[in-house]
Image (cartoon, rainbow, N blue to C red; front, side, top):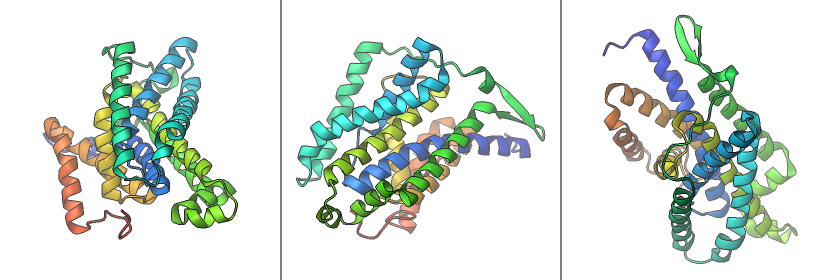
Length: 292
């Protein structure tokens, strides 16, 4: 296949849109790990639940713009309940316990959703304004993928403002460094942990809601996304939000260009990318030494 300038730009745009979804997912996973030291193997499950939440709301009310925020809220509330009831009792114990719990939770919820909705993909129709493409400099640019990129930029700006400029955001940042010090100041640290978990899985829910218009909603969609999301986080460095952004951009481009020539090798390519990056920098691009 001949690589023309138009084809290269098109694939870069596809990679940016895919990387934007990975960034939303990996940002949520990074917040959870950085704050709670919990390796959330159910992250892809919350991504799947966000897709189905958006599908149900849009099907009932016919409003795409109602589906996105509702998915964040519903998945965030479910994350709040999950952390409060299931994960919180495991803090301070063997780190494998939360990992195994979230893994089991993922399997159970996926089977439950398969029983309720079946395995037929649920397609969410795009708003009329985002259907099709527009042409710029001879390149056809899908409108919806541009929307995904812009939405991710808006989410990142919100996260930057929240963590840098708000009192709650600064408390969360402090709790990731020294929760004991924050606790001595009279702050309810367990509630901060719960909020952080809900925020992280809410971002996963948003990623699922946005991406379901491209890949369709199926109960098993979270399994592969969980693996890919962890690859992104490991490449960027565990606990690093900047690393999650860069890792998402890298993996998005790798999948985009490898799929162009050998689609069957796209999944292999992301693991090879992780392998070579970890050979050069064992803790990831922006990971902190001794973070684990």
